[in-house]
Length: 209
Image (tube, rainbow, N blue to C red):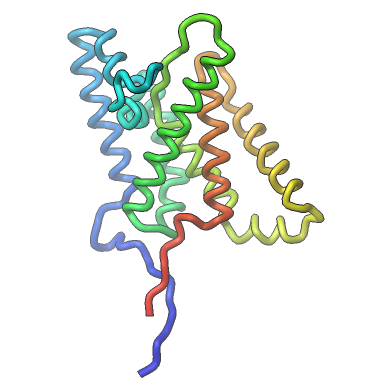
């Protein structure tokens, strides 16, 4: 009997799409925000938004990734998630997708409040929303595909040049979303983390024999 090697495909036929599951979490968290906000807007903001000191409300590290500031904020992140999420989930498993989304979202949020604290003289603005995690998926999709790999191999760039190109791309994509109240540091951080993971094919499923 011969052995063969094949890419492991995500079990989409036996389980729900992680993109759809993430959208469902968005809806549930937003509903909870709305209920709490009906009682007290300040309480809802305090329970769901990430702000320093982080260890004072550690649960907001995770919750803030799936919480949103309003319907428009929710719909914009949901739209981009749909555009990139279904593509990324095709090359990975459900649990890797969820772990990546949460981890990149949390790290992006921490970067936002930490770096903002270094340049802000007054209170550090709190952050909430999935845009850092969504930018991570976008970075992964752009950096981890075969076309990008082929282009990078043809460019006369060393390792430093590729890093510079990655940072320039991340900066360009981030500036496209620049607007008052937008967490640009989280966007930049998420895209960079996603692109690095994409070049390393971090979410690629293993092989079976």
